[in-house]
Image (cartoon, rainbow, N blue to C red):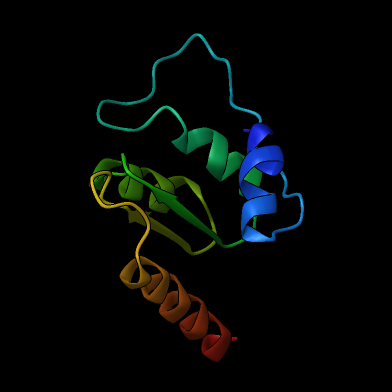
Length: 102
């Protein structure tokens, strides 16, 4: 959350970034959908977005496709390996494809 701007961002020479406020609802997400999914899609509003996480599943991808009007890349990062060049290449290719389509 916001601590990433204090701990991670300086180490990566990143500016402070926006932080998503998680929905604190009484309803459980649909079966198999991560508890972060709806909050991220709502935060992105009508904008394309990329989400990297080690808990993303096909259920999250289906939910976002059905509820978010813009393209989104939900990319699962291997929790045992962490973020790799291959993951970043996947994101770059997705972004490049979006730029070409625009």
